[in-house]
Image (cartoon, rainbow, N blue to C red; front, side, top):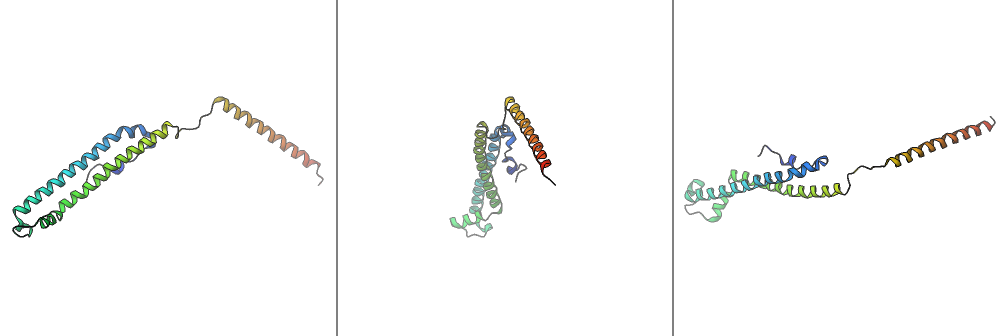
Length: 157
C-alpha cells in the first residue's frame, strides 16, 4: 500500500510534544493526499469500466444493451476496483485519525501548560527544613533507644 506506515506516524511521544505538534500538519497533509489521490483513482476506474462495458458488453458476458444494474454489478465486481476502494477506506481512516491526533496534542499541550507533567519542586529553605527535621527525628530516636536500654538494666533477670 505504502512505504510509510500511518500507525507509526500517528504515535505521540509525550517527551517531544513540540516535535509532534510541528509534524502534525505534514502527517495530515500526506495521508489526506493519499486519500484524495485514491478517491480520484476509484472514480477514474469506475468511469473507464463503465465505458468499456457499454462499448463491448459481450466481452463482459452481458446482453448487447445491458441494464444499468448489470453494468453497475460488473463494475462493482472488478478486483482492481475492490482493492482501490479498500485502500480508500484505509486512507480515510488514517486521515480522520490525524484529526483526532491533533485534538489529543491540543489536550496534552493544555495539560503541559497547566503543569500536569511537572515535577515537584522545593526551595532550598524547604530542603534545609527537611534536613533539620530529619536530624531532630534521628536525635529523638537515639535518645529513646538509650532510655529503653536504661530501663532494660533495671529489670531483674
